[in-house]
Picture 1 (spheres, helix red, strand yellow):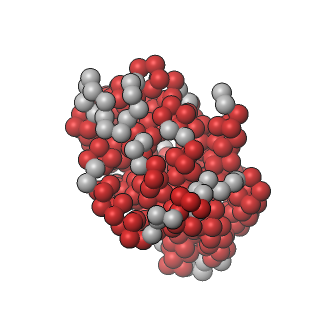
Picture 2 (picture 1 turned 180 degrees about the horizontal axis):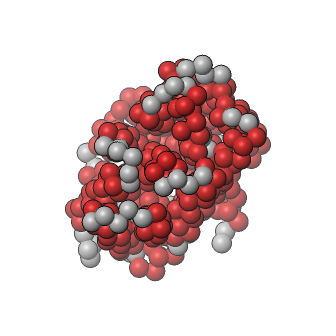
Picture 3 (picture 1 turned 90 degrees about the vertical axis):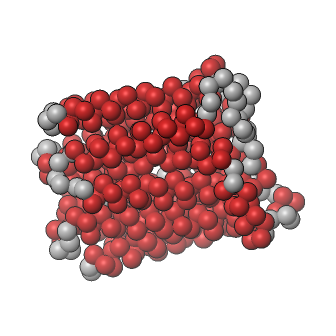
Length: 401
């Protein structure tokens, strides 16, 4: 394995994890936040949705700006704003204040979540890019595996406000990492053709590229299925199944282990069998597992072990889908990598926010509505795969298979 790819994965992965850390770390505290701030489930979930909405919208700005001024300046700005938002959350006297501060936090977290994909495309394509994307997800696993566990640990020795002070410290560490270990990958010569006008033209071109959109939304529905679990799991597992916040953190983490573990084989399988075949096979596997899960719960099998086992297998398939579709979607758009990364991220997070809203609207305290939404996402991803990736031919923009 090339040492430069490993080094880039470590630095970009740790920068990318700043935002997800702010999502995953406070999940075990959602019920406690609602109780302390006198807020119901929907209001507490609004703090999560505000964060996600900010990330979705602001990527459309960060992406083109990173094409125009380079990758590092907007990263400095974003991480700095994330730190301020974290402090605002820690001092929140009401749920409304918390939701507003989470939005500010999300505006900042958007930069280190969106720009690393463009950095990957600045330097790599094809199999190398797929390998780096997979390694990014390996480092990225620090968040969903350790963040809920560290969150529950912090709660034991403090309260939910302590979580946001820890997030502020994570932001400071991100600034140090950016300053000393991440070089600029967008040279001045490449920025000459970039402007807001070119960004608008780039967005219009991408919105007409059905291959780009199809691959983006395959990944979007895969991510949305996990976001539906993220938004509802703490209430279902802690309140419905009666497990402790600490054990919930473990349950949440094992799905991340499955996702990250399988993602490490994306580049290998892509080189061996072709990226199209990898996506088609993995999406089909994801659909079959989630359809089985939905069927069992419809017929009354409301069992935590069954839920955990099938989600573990299903999210493993997603580990092959998400990095591969991202590489395929951006393959032909190196000149506007920041813009393409931004539009991809925005479309995927808007989709996730809508799915989260739907799952929240039908939440009844049991796992069935969440399982139904996850199964629907699997169906949508499967249909888009059949329409976008034809068997026996190379998708537009895909590396030769």
